[in-house]
Image (cartoon, rainbow, N blue to C red):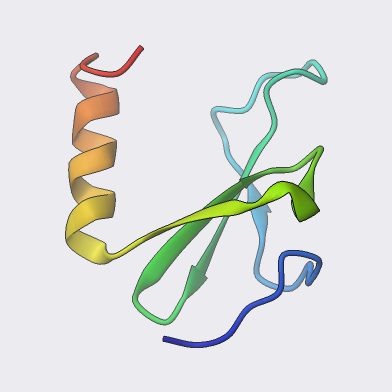
Length: 68
């Protein structure tokens, strides 16, 4: 797994589903095969790393409304 720094802005992009206001800002990045997400307002506050199968399950759960 490649090393990444939460303060490194290379490769991070804002989610197309982030709201236009300042309360819903999610950024994502690809690091190797993993997908990492973080709160763009608190980049040093931590991030979540998903392996490919976990990311697919997470997206599926969101699309199906299983996560609130």
